Length: 161
Image 1 (cartoon, rainbow, N blue to C red):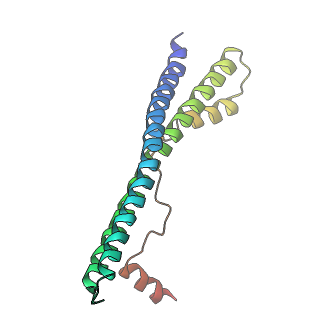
Image 2 (tube, helix red, strand yellow; image 1 turned 135 degrees about the horizontal axis):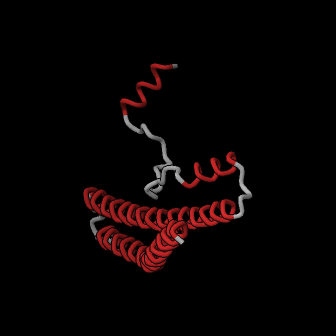
Image 3 (cartoon, helix red, strand yellow; image 1 turned 60 degrees about the vertical axis):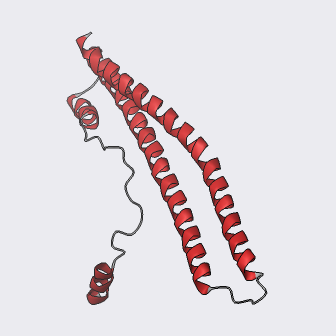
C-alpha cells in the first residue's frame, strides 16, 4: 500500500489542476463576451465623437482629436487582447499540468503493476522511472513569438549576413 501513495498524489494533483482549469474556463467564458462588448462600445463612442466634430459647419475638426480618439481605441483594443491572451495562457497552463499529472498517475500504476507481477525487465523499469521522474514544467505556456523584436537583435541579425 505504501507504493500506492504516488498514484494518489498524482490523482490529487490532477484533481486540483482540473478545478483550476474549470475556473479558468469560466473566466474566459465571462471575459470574451465582455471584451467584444467593450470594443463595440469603445468604437461606437469614438466614432460618434469623431462624427460629431466632423459635422461642424466650419469643417475644421482638430487633427489632435483624431489622434487622441485613435490612440484611445488602439489602447483599448490592445489591453483587451493582452488580457485575453493572459487568461488563455493561464487556462492552457492548468490544462497541460492536469494532463501531465494524469499521465504520471497512469505511468505509476503501470510501473506498480509490472513490478508486482515481475513482468518488467530492468530496461523497462528504467524507461518508466525516467518518464516518472522527468522534470515537470511550471505549466506556463512559453512565448511563441520571435524572441528578439528589438533594434539590437535586428542589427545583430543584419551583421551576421
